[in-house]
Each structure stands twice: as structure tokens, then as C-alpha cells.
Length: 265
Image (cartoon, rainbow, N blue to C red; front, side):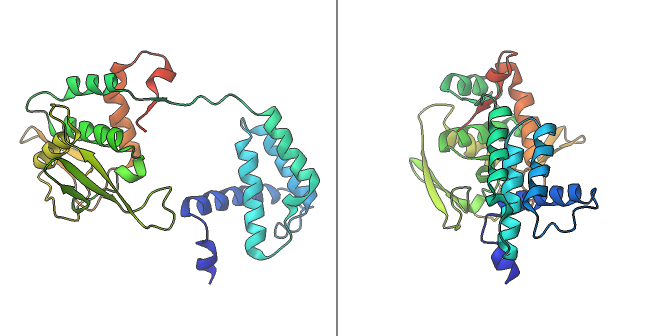
């Protein structure tokens, strides 16, 4: 029953709340006056949030701590100390004092994607470059998040005469894991996302009916002077994607961070 109650929220949310609540517990252990953190006294919760407000740079940390404490008390069946007026006032004060303008990532555009293709879409392009192009064009044309892109398996892709059909097992907006499908049409151009993906699958020698992840890490084979793809059961890590993706694309933008930090969705 414990696992069922915890699973009532998304896994990432549960991990975030658990981490924030552990920080509160660690802070409370420094003071012998605090005898209990579950249930917690509203005064000590207020002092903790005040401490965070003086040590962090954004109010989201205070909000996360408040929600985590609320979550822990809800699971245990105790009265929520965050319903106190003094706690609410501190949270509101943090929004006023620690608020800063949001710098959203600029969206990618067709010109940037074409520049990317001109750089890496040359004849006999390497497996490394094809993987980069396939990831970028697939994410751009399908409005995919990274978490959706990296979990695509070969069997999830169906090639039609004039399109491809890709099945997404789960996503951030699919909390009940019903799955969804989306289509990408073929283009009569060299930078067609369907053609790029097909070329990548052929170059990587990935069986299109297999259960293998499509995007995986590569290693360089010195004896053959070429890249080879890693084990089929290991998808490409987010940190690896970040390093490869931005290092390869950094030359396409100016030195301004806001222009370099772009979103494919």
C-alpha cells in the first residue's frame, strides 16, 4: 500500500519532494530545540523557509520546500503546517524578493536547421553526424522532448510510402502511459527528416523491427577508423546528448547566450 500511495504522483515529482524534505530534516538536526519534523511545528517550518530565503537565489526553492513538507504530512496523515498564515506569508515574500525575469529559450527556426544540415549533412556523412542530424530533425519536426526522443525504439517507427509513424510510449503529458502516435511527412528535399532517420538507421545497422533504442552512445574504433554504436539496451544519456549537441552546434550562433540556448520544441 505504501508504494501505491507514493505512486499517486509522477516519479520525478516524488523524487523532487523527497529530496527537498530530506534537506529540511538535515537542517532540523542542527538544532536540539526541534524535537519532531513529522509532524513539524509551523514556527520551525517558517524559520527553515526564512533560512532558505537568505541562502538561495530563486523563490522556486522555497516553493519546493513548502510543497515537500506539505506532501510528507499528507502521506503521514498529519495536519499541514504549511497551511499556517505565517508560512504562506514567507512564501509570498520570497516571490517578491527573489523573483527575476524569466529568460526563455528562443525557438529554433528553419534557417538554423538548414545551416545544421549544410554543416553535417554532406555526402557519406559519418555515423556521428547522422545521429546528430537525426536527433535534431526528428525533435524539431515532431515537437519532441528529450525524454521522448531518447526512449524511441526501432520497433516504434513505421515507415510508410509518404510518411513515418512514430509511437511514443510515455511522455511528460501522458501521466497514465496511454501512449501516443505522431506522423512526419516525407519531403522531396535532401534535408527530409524521414530520409535522414532512414540513413542513420542503415548506417548504424539497426534492425527496424528490433526492440533496440534508436539513439545510443558511440565509440571510436581505431582499427577501422570509424564510430560504432553501443549496446542496444542502453539509450543515449542526457548529459552525453547535451555535450555532443551543443559542442557541434555552437559555431552556428553568436556568443550571446540567449541566441545560443535554443529550444527544438
